[in-house]
Amino acid sequence: MVWDFQAILHFSAYEYFQWVPHHKRPYWRRKRPWREFLMLVQRLAELDGTATQESVLHDPVVMEWMSKQRQTGSSKPRLWGYTKEIALLSTLIDAEVGKTVMKRPDIPGEVLRQKMTQNKLKSTLSRIGVQSG
Image (cartoon, rainbow, N blue to C red):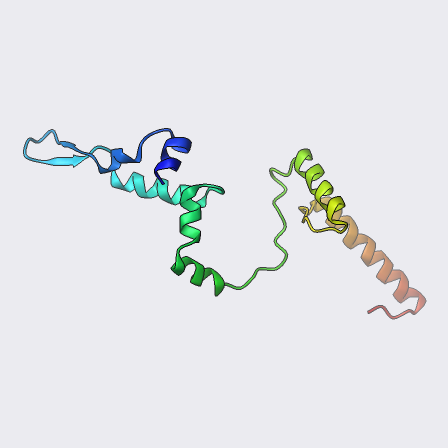
């Protein structure tokens, strides 16, 4: 976690554990607020590739909880952030493996076009008397 604070956030986590005199003389307070520390730890746990995320994902309680979760259907990536470079990299991976393994985001216009094509095909088949399954 210390490395994450220094390398990603560019300040020392030690500041959250330092006590400094409060403006009211007999009192002391933390140099940085504890609530901010907890918020940043949560954010670091959500960032891919951080040491904080690794330690959270190796926690036995988290591992047990994750093992009991139901797998969601085909989770496709979001369209936002899916750049040409990512599309080319996905195509390269698929070519190396020899089959489609990388999921692509749905483009709404293409999905609608496919549904319309299917509906036209079904209506044509029903018009000529062929049962579609």
